[in-house]
Length: 126
Image (cartoon, rainbow, N blue to C red):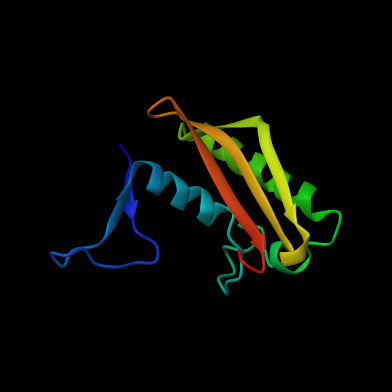
């Protein structure tokens, strides 16, 4: 079972670094890969979805842009033998009164060979 540092960083009750395991770690890794890419590091630009996912939800190109990023991320994850995307499970839900998009999809954790579900909100509440 994979283990990683908890984000945001914190400490556990005994004073050590807080960690996450299993599904929670998978969710953290995928969420970070889909985060905005606002940073000042010249060598880590364009590694996320950027600010468009929050401010351009009415733009008709945002969904294809997000889907393209997901496919690219999961190609890398699959090469690393972490996760495999199940592209036929990608679903969008639009909540127009809150100006939100909800994305959900299933993937297979290649270490445990178990299917998992990922859900992410884009917009004001994301």
